[in-house]
Every structure is written in structure tokens, then in C-alpha cells.
Length: 123
Image 1 (tube, rainbow, N blue to C red):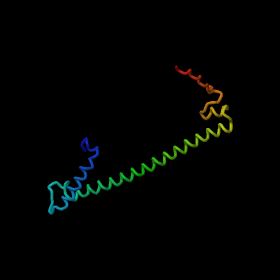
Image 2 (cartoon, helix red, strand yellow):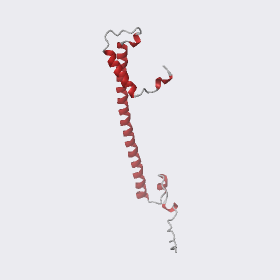
Image 3 (cartoon, helix red, strand yellow):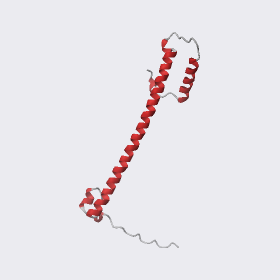
Image 4 (cartoon, rainbow, N blue to C red):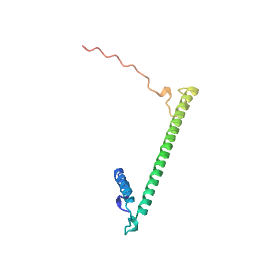
């Protein structure tokens, strides 16, 4: 295996290889000296290529479905925690220690809102 064997071959090159294989299939009496390049060996490599492409596509779709399911679970968890915080405020009040336990600030710990003094009109 060469260094570049882990890189993808461009799709246009693979399509040209397929066309070459289809042309090779039309040659009668093709018997190369190296059995590695016989029509049977190239056909087997082509079948393996197609099977692995199909398997990869199937796994990509399964990964996408798992990712969608995971995202839905994240949102359900986030919504549950947010709703729980609101319930703690409603049950125990916005100035209780329970509010702090769920990561919120007590109302008395917040800085009071101050209205900004109106700006003097410019002349």
C-alpha cells in the first residue's frame, strides 16, 4: 500500500475506470500475463468496490439517523432542565435556596434595575 492509498480517488477518475472496465469486457481473448490484471480479477475488484460503496452509504445514513436521534434527546433533556428550573421558582419562590441549587440567582442577589437619567436636549 502506498502513502496515498488512504486518500479518496476523485469520482471522475473512478467513472473513467468503470468505462475502461466496460470496454475491457468487450475485448475477446483478453489474457494478460499477470493474473492480477485478468478480467476476472478486475471484475472481482469492481464488485468489491461497489459493495463497499453501498455499505458506506448505508452506514452514513445510519450515522445521520443516530445523530438526529441524539440531537432530539439533547433538546428533550435541555427542555426538561429548563422546565424544572421554572418549576423550582414557582414552587419555592424566586428568593429561595432551592433556586440557587438549580443554578439560578436569588432575586435578592440581583442588582436593582436603575433607570437611566434622561439626556439633556442638545442645542
